[in-house]
Image (tube, rainbow, N blue to C red; front, side):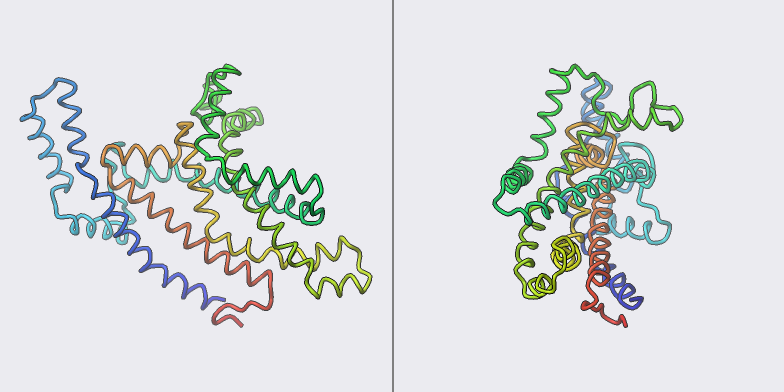
Length: 335
């Protein structure tokens, strides 16, 4: 097991480097940089002529290394990360990128993990119920729910909920985690309830798509397993139907879902990011969009690198879970 983990971690390093190169190149491929954004701001505010704004923009590029060749900018960024765990200075937020990530990423991960928990528990449970009641009204209802969850775009669901909250229910505070009353207050039950009342649309929308996928996969796999010979043997031995399903069928039907955990966390993260952008919550999503809009390459590249890391970590964890779930699976080097 230890050998497997070490091998996978070492193999992840060149993958992350390659992803960082591709991400950095794509981000820098867009025309302009943050100095151009400052130049446009100076001119729009009437504080400088075009020539004066250009001089200030060029001085800003020199001061922050934006005038250096692209490979050298990338190398300096990577050296800072490896040697000092320094992801650079955010030009837009005027703060270290690490501080911006530390402020927004935990919120995003917490929301994503909450959505993943509900999507897994509810989706798998509904998938078991649908498979054990094939072609019943319950199976039809759950199938319709999964169809909606996998076809309706998340941003559209977010816009519909915002419309209902703002124009039908007259909700004033949208786009924050807390009401003004609880913003700086210590944690309490009332503050937790206030948090839930603000973030439930994000949790619901991000959960809905994952729930639908888990339900469909669990139903299909369980139907296949229920027809397997060893399940028929268990029934012939007189085991109770619930024991046959939960002890013999469900663990083997879970294999594809466990393997899916390798990509589900990035999927939940992107789902939360997409919805958070629509709602304007101070999480990773708005930070990525805002940094892209002004050419703040360090923030965008760092967040993309973090998302790539979650994908690699998720795949390693899914391999470990599969080995725990099924003793027939052996990891390389594990005894």
